[in-house]
Image 1 (cartoon, rainbow, N blue to C red):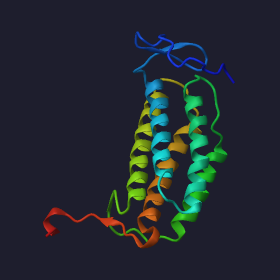
Image 2: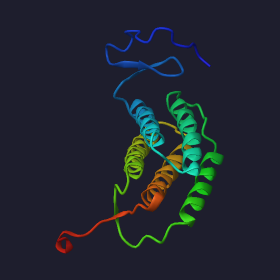
Image 3: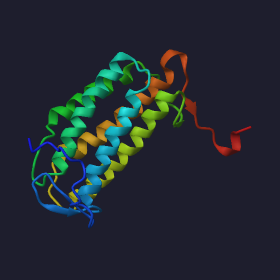
Image 4: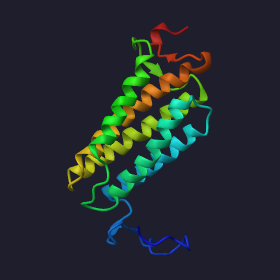
Length: 184
């Protein structure tokens, strides 16, 4: 592990570049920095979900996912480095199956909301999709671990399912989308 920061500001980024994990410098608006920066934002939005009252299984999974996202951010900020194994993707699929099993089949589109925790989870889902898009863009320019893209894809699915679970938690309901012609 690199040096710990004892001083938060360094002034090294004042001209629009940032240091990568391998010591090289990169423009702050590069695809790589967009990808790992959005993963960091995703991790923060999951922290917002975790600040709500959650069922223990959801809380446990999200706590683990925050650590995995830190691994993913580390991987993306060090060109050529791999930290996301296929087992992370497999675990997300296991979580998806377990959480989805208790839900009724989805017959309609649902709107983000239902409860505060569900709305927060939907926000995390949309940030996850953006992180995935930025990471896919990076794959077109540089070599990126394929498991990382799969991880973000599965995670966005899991966050959708978790939002459904949270909307129904403690007697709440999902908000069903109604086409404009059918609204009162």
